[in-house]
Amino acid sequence: MLDNLRRKIYKQDQRLLQILSGRIKLVEKIGKIKSEKKVFVEDRKREKQIYDYVSDKSKELGLDTKFVKNVFKLILAESKRLQKLQRKPK
Image (cartoon, rainbow, N blue to C red; front, side):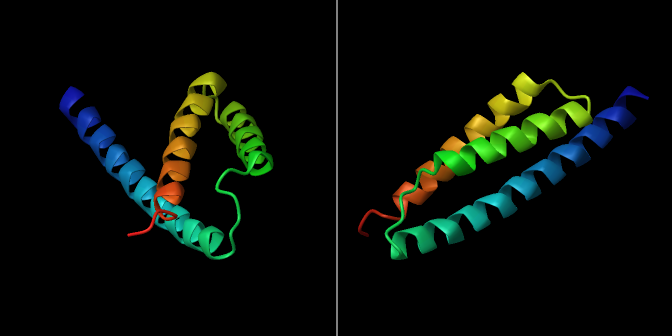
């Protein structure tokens, strides 16, 4: 029983990693566009929209909103870091 549940968690972890990988690929595309158009990496209005959305959605799903917001803080920090790297000359 315990092993079966752990296998299910492992599969969920795999899905999470695939989703993160897909998100990073999109972030890199956005970073390229922002760099070409000379748009700032940080967009506080967009970040607020994301935080509001994940807060509302986490409540709907019965998740701890503080936990979810912390997860998204990490995701957005990595997104900005990657976009800033695209601006550096190679």
